[in-house]
Length: 535
Image 1 (cartoon, rainbow, N blue to C red):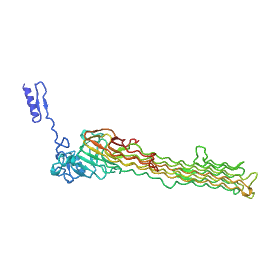
Image 2 (cartoon, one colour):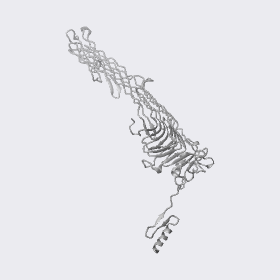
Image 3 (cartoon, rainbow, N blue to C red):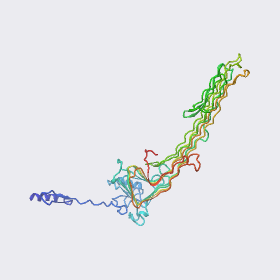
Image 4 (cartoon, rainbow, N blue to C red):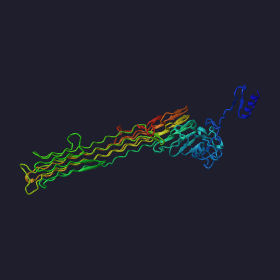
């Protein structure tokens, strides 16, 4: 009994003012009760929880960034207030992790670190700082409306792929307004971005995205035609040299290692003429215009070189399609396909060479004895360059939620405007003109000798392809990568029209070939993240 009383006295003494210790019997252990944790005065709903200096940093249009950010001495800018809330006011004071903002307009782009709240719409006249005053709350929100950039970003906790509950940022009582075409790409309008792994609750707020900008037209290829072919060289006349070499080839250099070459003329001989060489590049199939070299004279006269085929015209390129991608810069659309280059004209074949001796003719003994040489083929024109694809139109997006984000939207209105139209594709360049082959050398007139044959004409270059039109800009309330969000009652989304796709180069008003798609549209639309395939 004495031992039990001693233990009871010891337990009571050790827990004085902290807990009550008791036991039903001396054989049992002592049980100690701690008082339940008291709620923090900073907790609660943003519309009803009291605004206290110990709970956050205060910001007003009439404040001063040299002030400590208390109710009586608020700071002036949201940017500075967020820094104090995230890191503390100094003098060993702990970070409050919250900003209380007066109703009013702040022309700033702001970034909320993980777990820092922004409670706006406060009635600040008279130092009240409440949310439900007659000129506060939803009737007088904190307006975040910078002239450019993304108005509001929420970051994830550093070092974590996905933020937890203790790193949730609560955004309440604000009106976030993105200016037209104000995103980093200079085309889209995006109000809010949640970076990878961020967690946020957006409530009692209004999110407004402006218009996207129309995409720029694709660059036209040169309006002047591509380089023309070269006229073939003429062959050597008979009886002027003992060995008449066929005319040398001519070459059109088109760039990128592509050339068109007329074939050598056939050599002039004594009893038989040489064959002309084929033009280059060589056509795969035999046709009426395949650039074959002409046969040299033997029992019959020589043959002319065959004309080279025309280069193929490039077709119209495809218009842009697909949703685009999301990244920390916002939304990136898809450009129209560039037009391809037209085909090079094929070189003409060289003309066959002739001969100087036969039953009816021969060179005079006093002159050289070589027969007439064939002319070389003309080279083909270069293919035209293709036009460049039309650019995508800018998007209008309320909230972008990247990978691993957790988003809750409650009692909030989201408005988007029109996406920009896709740009028109550029036009292709005309191909180069074909040129004729060279004439064959002449036979000796006094002996009625056969002439050599002419080279074939080169082919014209193909026209460069017209480019496709760009993708229209998206108009989306919440654009996300992975669906990890909750839409609570009272939330409405009013979505504008997406941008229409750009027309292809040289397309008529009703011509749909090569036109880009209209941009994505919807209250909630999934997109690939940067690095994933666009299509």
